[in-house]
Structures are given as structure tokens and as C-alpha cells.
Length: 471
Image (cartoon, rainbow, N blue to C red; front, side, top):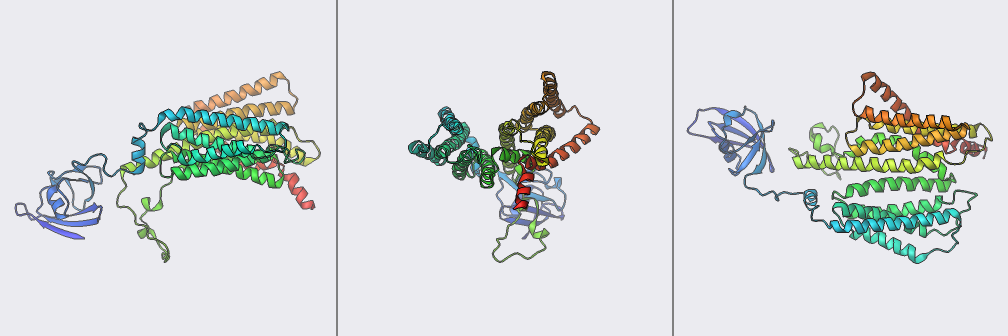
């Protein structure tokens, strides 16, 4: 749309401007205009409206137009006198209402999470020891499941209480899943006695956290629930595959441990989600015809500052939460793999499986030390590296056990692992060189590439393939 305005008191100077308003773009040709008020009058905007230039300069009605060049593109900003509460988004309201959230509920909810988590551990120990009979404690299982559903749907939605509710939902659902599995259901000679109960607990926790995520969708507290749901769903899927294939707990943990470096490397790219139409003008870039059923997406004329801040804050929270949970998962799975009984030396496949286990511990610890070198977030840097330190220590213990080494080699290996982790912290703080950085990049890439393959070898994929080929 084009508008023309004239002024009787100025020179006959014709200037063209483009104003991006909420109603669309307005192309204006001004003749003899002096102030911004003339431009606002030409595009039929109130005199209290502020205009923003491409360089971030704010213009008001009494400013002179001679500060602008011809062809300048201006954006409508906030109007003078507008209160800070106008135009708020849902996330902004959530952030401002955090102080008013029921912070007193956080402590009781953490207590509920601790109690249900302890109940889950007791039931897991009972199942692992074979002391549980075939009877199922129906009422405790039902009560734990109902508690998880109530917390997921009706729990607090803001502040520390929301975080505690998410954790309590997970622990209550996991406890309900463990209680629902009867003892002695699976023969320990066929598979690990805890594989089926843990898989059931993870599936129940995934369902409860999915309800929690759906109830929190669109709020800042949904970030943690989404990350927990992703990790729990992945672990539950791995457990289900292990149950169907008869792999066992060690094999499932080895495969997941081998995938940990890939997850750590994918966190920076997977944390920030920006729609394509925000950064690309689809109407200008599109070269194919749109479908009849497809809805046309219009690129926004400008991006608001609070939208960018909300996206960056959400991405940082998602990245930190995922890094911490990844470190916890690695710290839990590494002892299961590296402290498991050694396979019997029955052939070359067992030897490959044996040494692949030690190599997996070394490669995973090396990758998790090197990947966070460029991280700026403290949690995203510490989570994988602390897990890498624990994995390195367990790897040293594994090699000492396999090689029948004495106390001195074990102490030297542990000292080397501690020094490696300490050096990684120093490198992360800026003690680096170009040559060392290039070498670290190469080692990181090799470790990330080898880890999944070593995880499969540790799980005994060669023996399984030989059995499959032999019919």
C-alpha cells in the first residue's frame, strides 16, 4: 500500500519510506515532510507510536526526518504510555509469577519423591535377591500409580515446586511399575532378573511423565519434563528390545552407553528449535507448488526481542537439563557394564566381546571429556565430564581385573584418569593451543564414531549373528 503526504512549509523534497506495521507493510512517499509525526500521519498511526530503524535507533513524533536516508525501512515499536502488562505472552507471565508460586510445596514434594524412590529401590532389591514371591502387592502398586497420575495432572506448574513434582511423578510411576511385576516371573538363568521389572518401571514412568509434559505444555516448566520424557522413553525402548531379544541388562546398558557420546554431541544442535519461516522468507525461497491441504505460513515482518530471549533461555535450560541427565545415565550404566562378570573364553567372539568392553569404557570417557570443550553453560560442561571421570576410574578397575594387576598399576591408572579429567577442566577454561585443539577434534570424532560399534560388540552382537546364521 502506498500513501502520499505533503507539507506546505518545507522544500519540495520527495522521500520514500517503508513502515512495517502490524497490519502489513506501508510504502510512503513524503513531499516536504519535516518530522516523524508527518510520517505517522501518512500511515495513519497515532502520534504516540515509536518507530525503530534497522540500526536500532528509536524515533518519536518530534524527531526530524533528516536523520533518515531515503528508502529507510522502519518498524512500529511500542507506543508511549503503554503499561508493561500489555502484549505479554504466556511464558512471560509464568516467569513473572515464579515468585508467587507455592514455594512451600517444594519441600513436601521432594520428600514424596525421596519416599517413592526409596520404595522403588527396596522393591528392586527384593526382586533381584529372589525374596519376592509370585504375589503382587496390588494396593501399593495402585496407590503409587494414582499418585503419579495426580501429580502429573494437578501438580504445581511454576518454580521449584514444578521441578519437584516432575521428579516425584517419575519416581512414583517407577515404583508403581516395579510393584506391579510379580516376583519370579522371569527365570534368572534366561535373562537378568531385573531386566523385565526395570523395563516395566521405565514404561510406567514414561507414561506418567508424558501426562506431566502434556499438562505443562507451553510453560517454562515443560522443558525439564520434555527432557525427562525423552531420556526415559529411550531407556524404556532399549529395555523392551533387550527383553524381546534376550540380551540381558549388561547388553542393553552397553548399547545405550555407546550411544551416549552421540547424544552429547547432538545436544547443542538439538536444544534450539527455530521455525524455518522465522529466519527464511519461504514465499521468496520456495520453488515448488504448495499442496491444497497445506496451510500457508507467512514469514513475520520482524522478530520481537522477548521471543528471541525466550527461545535462548528455553534452549539453555533444555541443554543443561539434558547434559545433567546424560551424566546421571552414564554414571548409572557404566558400573553395570564395566563391573559385570567377565565372559567365558569360549572362542574368538568372546575375546572380542571382552576387549570391546574395556575399549568402550575408554572411548566413552574420552568422548565425554572432549565434547564439552566449547560449552559455556556450567551444567552442560560439568555433567558429562563428571560422568567421564567415573567411567575412566571404572575402566581402570576393569583393566586391572582383566590383567590381574597389583595395587601399584591400579593406583597409577586411577591417577592417570584423575589427571586426564583435571586436564580437561583446564582445557575448557582456555589453556589450549591450535595444534592441541585440532588433535582434540580428531580424537573426539574418532571416539564418537567408535563408541556405538563398541557398544554393540560389548552386547555380544557377534555371537548373536553367528547364532542367527547357524539357524
